[in-house]
Amino acid sequence: MKRKLNILAGDKALWVIFILMSIISLVAVYSTIGYSAITEFHTTPRTMFVKHLGVVVLGFVLIIGLSRVNYRYFSKMSLFGYIISLILVIVVAIMQTRWIRIPGVPSFQPSEFAKMVLMIFLARNIAINRDKLDESSTFWILLGTIVLVCAFVVGENLSTALLIFLAGYILLFFGGVNRRMWWRGFAAFAILGLVAFVVIYFFGDKMDLFRSSTWGHRLQAWLHPNPNELNQENMARMAVARGGFTGNGIGTTIHGRLMTQAHNDFIYAIIIEEVGMLGAIVIFLLYALFYFRCIRIANACKGLFGSLSVAGIGTVIFLQAFINMAVAVGVLPVTGQTLPFISYGGSSYVFLAMGVAVIQSVAIDNKKQRLAAQPQPSQMDAPAEEASVPTNK
Image 1 (cartoon, rainbow, N blue to C red):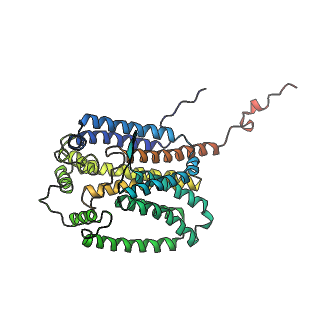
Image 2 (cartoon, one colour):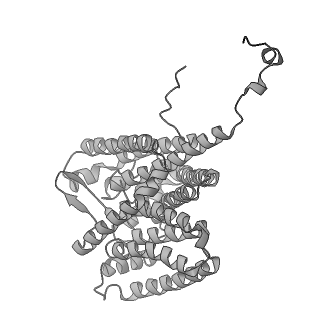
Image 3 (tube, rainbow, N blue to C red):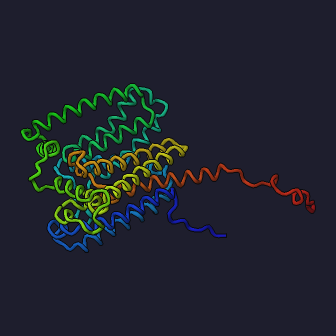
């Protein structure tokens, strides 16, 4: 009897969440892409929407295809991936840009690739050093793996560097490193972050260090917004206020047709304008459920590498979603982080989809392990009348 092909193999709840997010994404992008398509990309909204649809379909294909690969293979490839990602972030740091543009190849952000690869590489190193996790030297080596990437990302993309560092540091906690070292490091980095916040706020405009002027302006605009200035942040706040609790209806956005980043950084604000805080809560719950399922898959995995890979990737996706939503409603300053699987598709969408493929690969392996552990029927389990039938010699 032929086995039925299961296209959406893995964790069914994750598939349902991803499909719902994809539907939300297509509707939201179609509603918000017009202004940017005409003024920024000099094309038609339909062309941009079709391109986004292609990226969404590519995301599905990548998850379906890569999830069939045994997740242990990603451990073997993670060192190579880490080296490649490190080379790429060094290149863009030297070029003082965020993008790699190669003729004939779609442009992409190496930092998006790096944050996925780092979680897998870090999981691999923790698994290899599982017997030495209580040693301080192991803690510093693992921390250095994170800091090395962040050091070359921070100049042009501070928010992504902070996201990578925070997710990686949380993964060290999940991995079971020396708790005393971890908490000391947490306190030290919190103090360092507070000092950096104060310095950038007061002196960012006066320093000529990377994009310090932009960082300082964003902090000042966040803490002391000018209601008379027609900028992205204010229009996002107006969109949220206009949406209220139930929204004004899908496709009725006003502010989304005036913003250049309505389809990316501030798509959550436009969703609130159209479907209200009720819809916003549903979206937040989708991400929370996504992370919960990741933790369930991680806990069910017998291998430390697979468990930590899922936990790390899930943490990245949830943190990025939380940051984007917090920015859209004015809780955090502008960061430039997209809303995973809902914002307009690009390199972030593709690399995050690859991350989901790794999660589903672990989920598929978990299911195989459970089935293998189940007792198999044997001759001893045969009915008494069958067991007593004599055999011809």
